[in-house]
Image 1 (cartoon, one colour):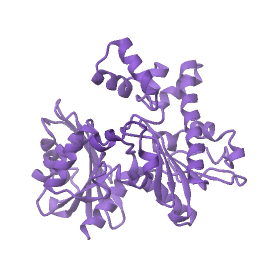
Image 2 (tube, helix red, strand yellow):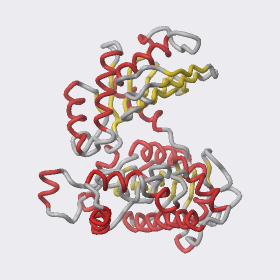
Image 3 (cartoon, helix red, strand yellow):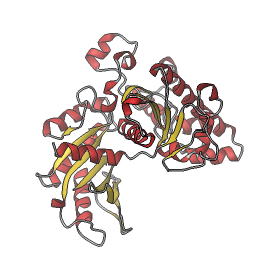
Image 4 (cartoon, helix red, strand yellow):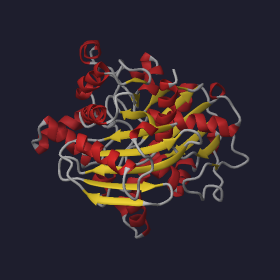
Length: 398
């Protein structure tokens, strides 16, 4: 059974075609520059490549090209879309309406679009992509939506509420939602399997670190707290996002720079974080290279990141009344040994010790804690697309 996994952005459409018999990726690619030209890059499991500029006025044309490339030409992997059993879509914001994976009916898609106010960068493009997919893919192929926020619906009210008047929650749904839920769910289940445990037996702090970063406390397989909040801006310092900040500092900056609310949001989401502090780049690899050259602001940026991660590990362990394991995942978490080491240094009092030799690993499932470490520390590569495919398969099979 083949599942097509879609991750749509405002001007992009990433995809993977996965054979669920052995969970192998048959082909993957990206349609980007939608609405501003168009380009598709496509690669098969046997390294055949299709790469071309295209005309993508909307997501519909991108889907049409995707279907064409999958089924015809030198990089085709199936003869027709009848060989696809279902399509699984990643959707960022499900709010309190969608607590689990569901079939993408027209009513569901409309509701996803209505939630765009809570995730303006993500949800409307998701809805556009869903409608485009339904117009291109045969009607008998089921469409399934998997929500980033659904994993965090198990947070207790004391964790997700803000200290603003309660009417803001009742009228405007202002609360912590959390994101990266698909990744946190995948890696915590994978870790339990690697440890020979059931998820219900473990208290885990999962650190998804990349251009966007979040940390989640997972107790007995359920999210009980997380760092991202009402939007993905909250929590850790990230590539271009500032992370947690005093709200009065926001209004102060806004007044000083004479910015509108939209301009302020853009400033905090796209011009802050690693980029804003370092003045160099939003990419941690560039920050690391600058540190090696003695750049003090790059060093400060890295120190801010690792300090904040360390604090959240401690606070989430307190919230769970214990800690069995820490996970590092995501682009930085999987590939930056120096970040993992800096986070775990000076935490032996907490039962965390990393073996420097074991920590010298990138993108590989591995336990990196020392034998003396009471808390296990692991690198666990994430695979959100596979989890979406699994959810989609389970949904279409009833």
